[in-house]
Image 1 (tube, helix red, strand yellow):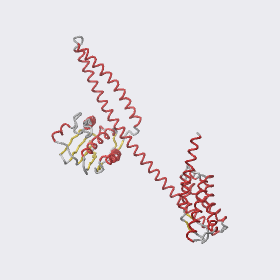
Image 2: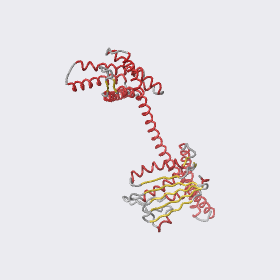
Image 3: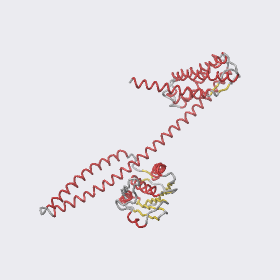
Image 4: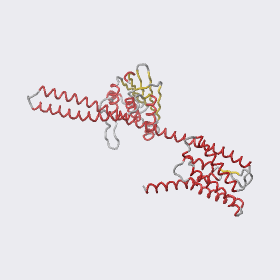
Length: 418
């Protein structure tokens, strides 16, 4: 507990010193409004703005440090410019110290970061701070008059207005950054869940396949029951398949529950899907090949329920397009909606696919890609998975390709299935 308090004190002191230096820099922009020694500076705008947005600071410490530094630098500047050193130069700027100290005291008693929930309330406090501190300064300078007070009030209103505008801009920027960060995380979450959803699809498919294996093995056992060693082997296969299927079921239920817990939106628009995939793909392209250009075009928007399937389909097809691009190529993703079907067109002007292997690209395990460092082949399940998803949705996929001219995938899915 003591260690946390010590860290907090050190942080507040560090912040207070840095802020004081910043305020001092701004305070060097000032004018003499009455042809006198009274100064109106920009530093007041800075100190009011900082007090309204900051929490881990000591306003009183800032008032003292900023006041002393401001008076010192102004004195040095005037001495250098006039080439005359006099005690009057220091005395001339000493009331500025009183102004900033007064501001620090008010900022400690009435923390502006607690008054910023209402812009009107903040505006009122900033005006009061400005007028009170300036009034104290002119009293110390023995310059009190009605004309001076009028200028101080007008100045207070103007500076408070500027501070509030700066505060609103700061808040808007902060909200914009938070929103952008939230959208980025939301996009990443959707892509992650779409990948999990894809794996769940394959797990479900393998579970169904295991069911078939189990039934066939058990049928063989029944047919050869008591006749030979073959029946015992068939029964053993059926039992093992049954055990694997039960384990798969448990994993599948866990994945489906995870997806349900994460998934908050029942429907998602195609424009949102395109936007999320666009943002993430562009980041990926920056790493892989910045020369690739990708463009998305949606002719008509539509809300769909099985949006994770669309994520998986488009992601796999776009990744294939990226891998086919070796120079300054373009990938185009187009979405078309009619009353009956959704058409997705994913094309690139990359290396293309050889005509001899075009008929095999959707086969399980078929791939022409390999790691140049290790020589390991790609798994070859991407396009197979895409085809399975599309067929599960009652749709079709076609491919058109020419060597060195590019490839185009045409996906058609019935609207009712989505």
